[in-house]
Image 1: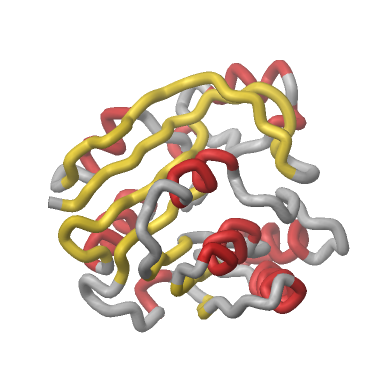
Image 2 (image 1 turned 180 degrees about the vertical axis):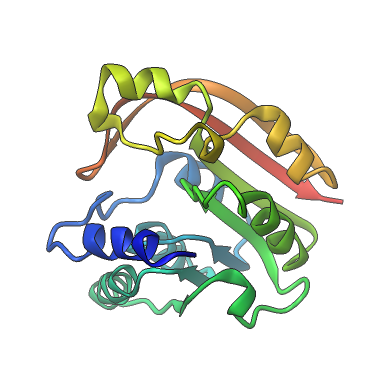
Length: 207
């Protein structure tokens, strides 16, 4: 990933306040509370709010991101909550995860650059055991209309970084679909996710 992209996230996460708050994403919380505890990987985990929540439930938590500022805040948040998370820094292909290592993978607003997002999804698939779950929430391609009305909702302004149901079906073709919907939701997550937006929600079980 290019340096301006990394610096953008370091700048966002360098402030004292948490960019997306300290509470977990509602959809992730709802899904995790249904599951038996196991091992989980959080992609593009930023400041750690979701990873720390999972660790508090008893999950064995791994996470990665490109932002050193995000990692630093995530580890401080984990310490404040008296839990530990394994947080790696770097691009996915440089990290040392193992085939079928995880029982679940969480992709919560993991908007990777357009030219690698499908590659990342298919790489992450290799790290999930058969029968394991992907939990996904991110902005849909229709979200641009919401940004135009209310920039405080946040999210990428590059259409190619946003998601469609068909893209998710293609990237996770070897999954039984438990839920796959596009819907309007109200977000209140820290400084940068506030208001109504259009999201794709997906829970899939690897065949």
